[in-house]
Image 1: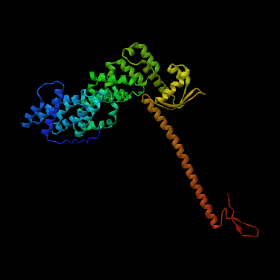
Image 2 (image 1 turned 90 degrees about the horizontal axis):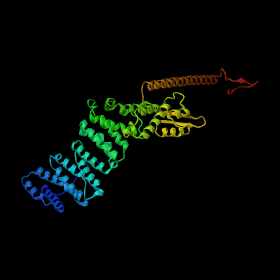
Image 3 (image 1 turned 90 degrees about the vertical axis):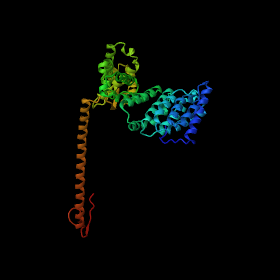
Image 4 (image 1 turned 135 degrees about the horizontal axis):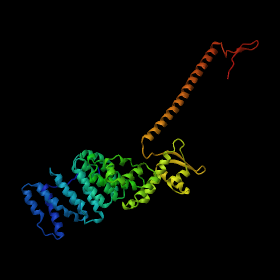
Length: 434
């Protein structure tokens, strides 16, 4: 959608244009075999009574037939309708039905239906004022068309404006949640799993604390949790554990919550114990067991790397044991965990060590804060030592310069070191002391 600055330039009076559109709608209906009384005569009598909103109501109701208009006439006919509706002080009352009609299939042009609908909906969106609540409803209609055509990528450049739009529209939490879910559905249908998950989490954040145990909150929480667990590149679960609706799963769905805790902070051995204890549960819940196993191995390796402390070295044998893999597969898993962005380091085949440069903490708790404090103390001690050396060298430099200045004064005054000596029977000569 372009910036909100659209202008429709259509010549003619309201009466002339409404009669023209009514006649066009009547012709389309007759072409489809509809022999009901024409709209044109009905509108003529309403115009005589100056009932403009009633005229517009008839036109908008009858505009559903425009979806069968030839492609080359569709945009022009709808632009005319938008122009007429815009002249009403009660314009918003007509927009819902227009958006509903535009969300329906455009039978005259199946190949370009979504493009035609989005063109008109974008025009409607952009002629509305920036703070108009009606923009919210038009945007939902746009999302319905986007979802039906799996064309989410056309919308992505505009989503950077979403936060400012919501602030201008001043929507309540329920309306915001509805919009975020529409975005999540559109993104998911288009295969944009990252975006779908982001909007699911945004939707969960709109649920008030006192509604965190509701059926809706539970449904959305489970959907977000399943998406996070099975997504191949999602490894941080702190965004979920901080939500009240997710914490409510501890009571409503304790097995799911136990699984979340495992992926938040535990190791592969714990996950295997979970599978033994809840045999067949993962398959019954239609979760991808292979994806879960792979992710848990990567998270386990990340935890091992973070636990190495000051040594920053991890033996191949320890990796093999913790990940329950053959020793020849260790390097492959290390490469995978580096690609996942969880750890940075290099492999030493000679020493059979993984040398760690940086590692990611899965949970940042009291122990991690203590380690940070310890490292800060080490850095502070190291910096103090560096500052001491710099201060000592500075003092030595000043003393040396003062000594040089004294020696120079002594030369000028002919006394002291460097004043020279006399050759036998000759005059005094300077001596350059190296």
